[in-house]
Amino acid sequence: MKKLNLLLILVLLAGITRVSAQTDMQENVTMIKKNLTDSKAAMKKYEWIETTTVFVKGEQKSVKQKQCYYSLDGQLTKVETGGSTAAKAPGGIRGKVAENKKADMSDYAKNAIEKVQTYLPPDPEKLQKIYNDGKVGIQILEPNKKFKLTFPDYNEPGDFLAVSLNKPDQILMALDVSTSVDDPKQKVAFNVTFSDLPDGTQFQGTTTLDAPAKDLKIVIVNSGFKNASGK
Image 1 (cartoon, rainbow, N blue to C red):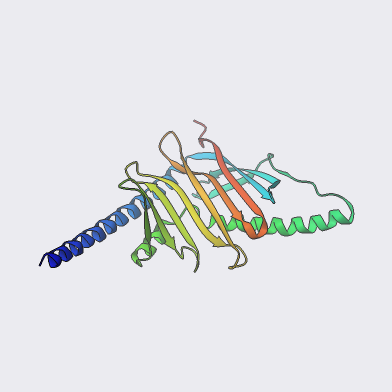
Image 2 (cartoon, rainbow, N blue to C red):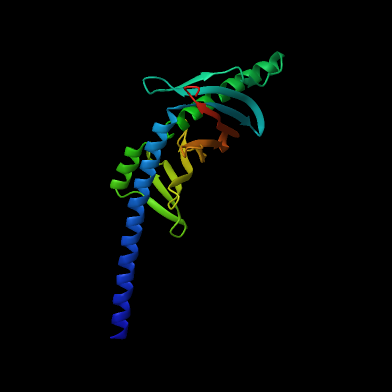
């Protein structure tokens, strides 16, 4: 009888734990969606500088800066500024080979950056659909406070997007993505750390992409925020 009672208690506790975890999952998904929606709307009153630095085998190859702002029709606009630089290739045959390699790497880096942008910012409706399909995973980083939710197949089969959040403070901490650029067998990963503006608006502070197969690293930093109206 004691064994039966213990078994019933364990089953009951397991059921309570599942219900609690499911409640946490629902609340966290709702919080992520609200944060993304609110921040996207708030960002439209700002303009800022996006600095993209490309490293190959640990060596800095180029730096590009763009002024970013939302146009009157609500579209994010990026205009390259004069703060862009690129490494010079040597002359002669060696230089020609270097130029060809540089062109190939430049194309890959361009495609990688474009791929990153398809995940940023995450689409709340996509996240909701993955949740509705029962695919979302949850990891407790700190009990009752910090969680990490994983959304598999976010853009394509085999990729995933994960969001780390601080639930009591209602803020996003980081975003991690595993995907590929031109070869599904060559995975690339990128991480986003979120920062806050004085009014509480969250934005993608630093994005770091690593493509080990290409010895490529790309760092994108958003900074210099100011009111787009100049006020």
